[in-house]
Image (tube, rainbow, N blue to C red; front, side, top):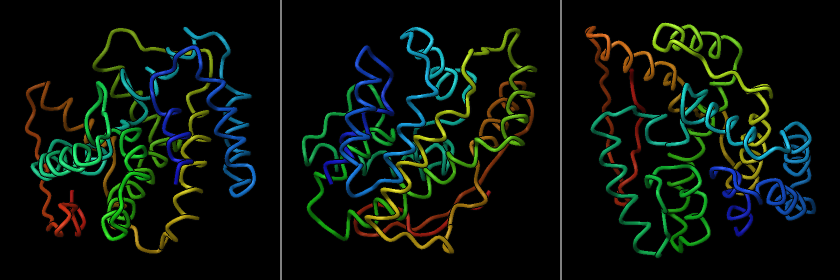
Length: 238
């Protein structure tokens, strides 16, 4: 499971070692996950080599005027009470295995990936991946569809005077999500027919937030039950 440490670094804010980290992760995956390795090589080939342009691309992709959030709980539940429960339980799990979350929240994808090899309970690990990480990654990938990206750009144009337009197409990070999903599917035998969160979207939560900022009526509801590990076991209805 240590390959999740290698790929987790690629979801962190880029530093001078980012492109080298892609090479290391790609080589680490080549023998057992060749398809994932190919996706990472494609990612590197498309990314800018200039660190400032790379950081701008990351910021536009995941932080400001984002394509998607990297906070899994938010992608699945928005700022609903359910996410608060998830954050509290994840914080406890991170502390239990001394997993440093740095400056990010407990549900940030990079932190969750670093948590995977540290969890000893197979039941907890299966729940973490199949009920939280994998559905979150699926939703993140959906946000790269042309229709979703067009909708978000329209919202951002209404909200901001200036849009960030990186030189590199925003879709390049889809290679990274594909590589990760290949790992998850191979290691945990995901059941693709069972997608409990398929009706949720980052775009939907984003639209609601912007409507609230504009003084419009906005609401979402979510009901979920939790297993003994503190992870939701039912879907969120929006």
